[in-house]
Amino acid sequence: MKKFKKIFALMLVVIMSVTALAGCGGSKEQADSSSEKKQITLWLPPIGENDAPVWEPILKEFEEKNNCEVTLEIIPWENYPEKYASAIAAGEGPDVGYMYAEMFPQFIEMGAVEDLTSYLTQEDMDNYIYIEDGKMMGGLYGLGIEAANPAVLYYNKDILESIGEEPPKTWEDFRRIAKKATQDTDGDGQIDQWGFAQGWGAKFFGDLNWNWYGFLWQSGGELYSDDLKTVRFNDEAGVEAAQFLYDLKFTDKVLPDDAMAKTNKEMLQTTFGPGKAAFTIWLSSAAAEILDTSFPDLNYGFITSLENKDMGTFASVDQLTLMSAAEDKELSFSLMQHMLSAESMTAFHQYHPRAPISKDEPYQGDPRLKEMIENDKGIYRPLVVAPHGVEVYEYLWKQLQTMMAGEATPKEALDEAARYSNDLLAQDQ
Picture 1: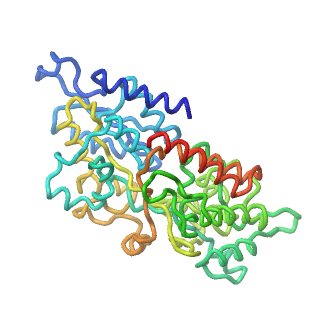
Picture 2 (picture 1 turned 90 degrees about the vertical axis):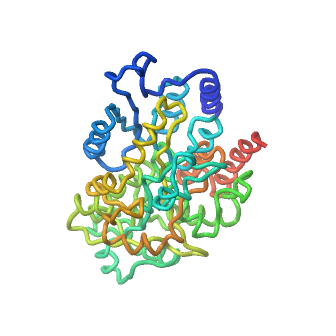
Picture 3 (picture 1 turned 180 degrees about the horizontal axis):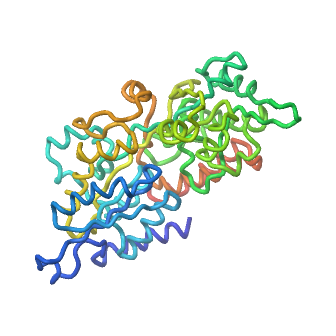
């Protein structure tokens, strides 16, 4: 924690005291010369499996229209916020970036992200579907670029049919089916078909998206208190959700033996895809991008959410951001608009099918998801933008991993994560 806070403190000092060298333009002489092309640095994570070739013609069109050069860097998800922190501190961050909810508070507080309110017309406000999700902490700090891609529970239709079961609706259904599906199918004395291909081996907290948030919300719980000054994931509802996950592994024994060594994506690819598990949980986009392409014979379906006291599943609304250190903010904002235009998003979504992010973009997502995306908006939801999100969720993930390794009880793990989180939040009060 100390190391992480030092990084952010360093960023604050640097941004307040020097002009960041984020990449747009160059020296004053270069900027004054019509022969010099302005430079824009764009940072994105890997939205799909192979993004760079898809973005290339979109960015080239912008370059030709605006006599500039755009340098695209695809930043791996792992250590993504730390990459931003260290780069901005060194004056080497992007002009246009991509941020998820957990990242925003620290960067907004230090003045690293530009408020977009004055850049947008009323027409823009009306057209962007997820405009409200960019409003946070007194400003409008992002424009949605990746949304309505919720975590869904995939099920193997053939396995369920073989044990006389229908797709689950409740926690009770799920637990019963997962236990029945966990079998030694070839009679060699070893389990070779599992109930729930869930991975707990991710090195960073991204797998909370599938392994925790939905189950917490289904139990009636929340991550933060309403005033965002404390966390509440260790209350009765939170402990119920953690106990449910704990029992699946240690009481029901429906998780594969390598659950602590693999991520959820790896479980989908190595266990569920080959037909060795009744259930797995991951992004809805995996249906078309992974399962249909890599496992064309797999007979599967999916549901948005199980139900306990409530229903809920995670779906991020990730944002394009204009960084405050961008030398030519107007040009950089124009790049954002170009990338989010109906034409650009239509081209991008031909390769990586997603729901539209503006009202003038046609739906090109997986047709099997269209009804869910349009009708289940109350069920899938993003995270609240809250202080110290990255640190809170990273520590929570480590404690849940400790729990799933059998080294702490559900209550012990959540209480320790809450203690750390509340101590951190108290420092801001």
